[in-house]
Amino acid sequence: MQPLTSQHIESELSYAYLHAVASAAGMACDICGRHEDNAGADARIVAWGPFQNGGYRTEVELKVQLKATIRPPTLTNERFSYGLKGIRRYDDLRAETLTIPRILVVLFLPPDSGEWIHHSEEALVLRKCAYWVSLRGAKASLNDTSQTIYIPASQRFDVDGLTRLMADLSRDVVPSYSDVNGGEE
Image (cartoon, rainbow, N blue to C red; front, side, top):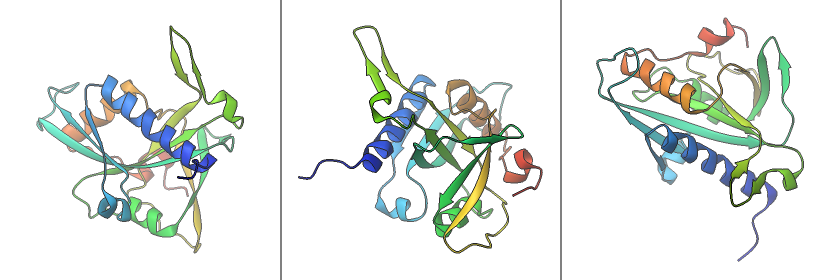
């Protein structure tokens, strides 16, 4: 068996981050099988009510495409830019015809792999943070290989953010790309 590459480790850390946040929020989180992965979903999160501010759905589901990068994000107008490779993935995430909403979660890791994880008897720390964005309704890409997307700095993928997102979904409030980016792309 070959050792994991740096990119594989980054990917595995994004799964660990996702599972930790979903578990701490009291939600189920499963890795999707290869068929769903081929359709642009790496993981599925399920939450059960009661939800914050009420909601008429008692169970909501969300599919997640995970990415991790060591490239420091550029912050402009309170948004991080991220180059999403693979127009097929971009198109999967921007589709408005899906029953189960999808989001992109990007984990920004430190450039130095020695800083990714620190552990002691008192703590296990995964450095840096992940942010989420819904690309639902985004414009078609004019590029064949990648698309720059903008992720609001306010949309940290943490327990509070995930809890608010699932509460919105329980009221059929599905986030779209234009909601947070004013139609800019």
